[in-house]
Image 1 (cartoon, rainbow over the protein chains, first blue to last red):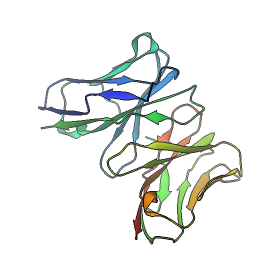
Image 2 (tube, chains in turn cyan, yellow; image 1 turned 30 degrees about the vertical axis):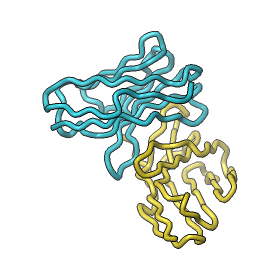
Image 3 (tube, rainbow over the protein chains, first blue to last red; image 1 turned 60 degrees about the vertical axis):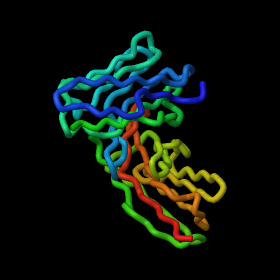
Amino acid sequence: DTGVSQDPRHKITKRGQNVTFRCDPISEHNRLYWYRQTLGQGPEFLTYFQNEAQLEKSRLLSDRFSAERPKGSFSTLEIQRTEQGDSAMYLCASSFRGYYGYTFGSGTRLTVV
Amino acid sequence: GQQVMQIPQYQHVQEGEDFTTYCNSSTTLSNIQWYKQRPGGHPVFLIQLVKSGEVKKQKRLTFQFGEAKKNSSLHITATQTTDVGTYFCAESATGNQFYFGTGTSLTVIP
């Protein structure tokens, strides 16, 4: 593995549409995190998985957001009924047991028009 | 979300000058991490501090964790143009998920 992969790199969608992003972590890493970053701000925690279990979900994450990590490998983040306020960079990161630094992917930039 | 105070928000320095950014928390932390994000890039892990009063060095970068484990600093000696970017601290009370600060954007003037 060369790092954390995210797909797509860019996504433009119309308001009200559903979108899904994919993250492939480093294979040895058992923890996977989703963050959201807007311009000029630090990454904002959304949720994290240890293996296939979703252990924590931010209170900022509305019911329109859902994340999965089937079989503890890749993860998907789905946003239903997108709103303009969802426009941001969605970053995925993975780590080994959470005791070491995160390795971030290049992110998926979402633009809702 | 968890509020992580980081100062200053912006810093412009002449190449060769030193630079320091500070991170303060209202709670006692389990550990703290530092990241660097280049313009247009993603955060890259620099270091993790765990012990009270811990000081770690990476070439021209010095990282410090406060005695009370409520604050941390990153100091760069003799900045270079390659140091340009935004530096984030990320704190955790539990050692599980980390909450990022607002970052300090460093501009180095040649």
